Structures are given as C-alpha cells and as structure tokens.
Length: 347
Image 1: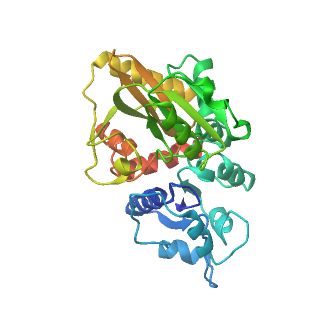
Image 2: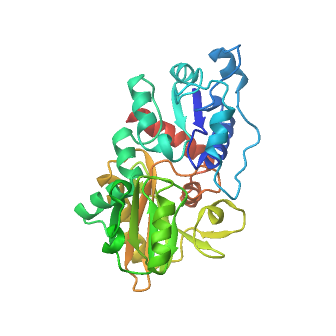
C-alpha cells in the first residue's frame, strides 16, 4: 500500500508527534509498504514535488526525532515555514494524501486531534486512521468529555469548567476544595496541568492554564494509582500501570527515559482490572470513538476507580503506553500499525 504518515503540526505535542510518526513509518516500511512521512504544517517545500517519486523513495521529512523536556516553541516553528500563508496544511500535503491509499495520523493534540484535520480530510475524500471528526472533537475537550461521562454514568472525579470570557472578580470563588487539579481543556501530554493545594496556587494555576486554552477544567484531586487502557476495535487491551519515579505523570515524566516505570499487565485484583476494562470500552463507546484510543484512570485508596479522559491519537512509539499494552496481548508493534489501518479502512 501507499501510505502517508502525517506528523508534526502546531500542537504543544509536536515533538511527540514527530517521534510517533517516525516509528510508525519505520514499522510500516518493514511490512513492505511505500510510506511517506510528512510534516502536516511544513509540507514539501522543494520545487521538485512528485508524489510517485516520494512514495518510491520512502521519503521522510526528518531522521532526527527527539523529545525535549519542554514543549516546543510554536512561534519559532511558524516562522521557520517557507510558505508564510495562514493556511494550516503545508505545501502539497493534501495532494500527497489524495495519492495514497490511506493517511496514518501520527498527530497529537491541537488540530490533529480536535477533529479539524479529520473533517478536512473527509471533505477531500481522503481515508485516514482513527476516530472521525465528531468523536475527536468530543474527546479532545476535557469539559465536553466530562459532560458525556456524567450523562453516561462513567465514574469520574467531581469538576468544574471555567471560561476565560467570564473571568473577573469573584469568578473563581465557586471552587473551594483543595488539593485540586487544574487542566487546560484541550492541551495534551499534561501541558499546563498543575496540582495545587491552596487558593493562591489555584488562582495562579488557572491564569497559567488560560495561556494554553480559553477553557479550563478544575478537578478534585484523587490520590491513588494511575492506569491507562488502550481500546482497539472496541475491545480493551490489558491494563497498564504508570508509576512516575518522582512527582506525577507530567510532560517531563512522560517522555524522558527512566522517569516513569510502566507495568503491563498491571498488578491489580483481576476483578478490578476486568471492571476497569469494561468501563474503558464504555467510555470509548459513549464518546463516539472509532478504531483505537486510550482511556486514562485513577484508582483511589478505597479501590474505587475514576475515568479521567480519553486520547484519540495516543502516542505510537514502540514504548508508548498503547503499543506496550498491545504487545502484552501478543500484538507486535508493526502488526499493531497494520491493524489500525485495517480497521480504519472498514469504518
């Protein structure tokens, strides 16, 4: 097959996306496919664009995918693009995707995960991997996700949504439970997330979160163990436990080698693991997700678990959470990439 892997973009998770896309492209090539790895924002900036040639050459826009300890400077990324137009898609991206059998979305966060790119590809008649634009939009916004969870009896911590447009004297007084977690509603990889213990920290954290998003979710802090469950084709994979060596599972702990220990299958009471897996499938269904995704959980000290959020385009390096879970279920990484394509072609 001819496959375009889209990565990069203008999300705070740009570096993570480039690493995921690079690994997916490498895996698919190992299975005999012709694969072009393309930065969705930069596009192909040369004057010699030829889609057939790029597929034959297995073109990649980078061979140096790394993740820094801090999110990328997106203003610098914008300035570095040769085409300084306000069009999101880089030169020749859509043309290249139309020439492929399918586009594998190696994107994370931002327009890559909020349904925007899915809608654009669909309108252009381009087949792509993962959930459609509606499920992506619902799951990307943590406040909307919360509403769906509450309406569908998915267990989730108490929370409140705050909007930048209403900020003013006394607006934040409605929250008085500490410690709590402050989260930008549409940022990924824990960018902008803070755990705070008092009102002064709370007010500062909300202000900081508004730098990333117009909507901020404040959630009751649940002390306990962190878990994640991948869902593939509507069926839950084995549960994985996430154990940061210091602090909590923030951006640095997620992507720096040795900062976090991951155990899969998780060492859990089998009945709790089973219930958590069924709830992951339930959450996947009510959020209208398709093909694959990942649902994050906390298990409190009272053995009660809480569903936090969903990730519609989870990390796809071989050591990312979902591929580790697939491996525990006997699905090797290149086979997982092919399985995602197989399921996506059927949707």
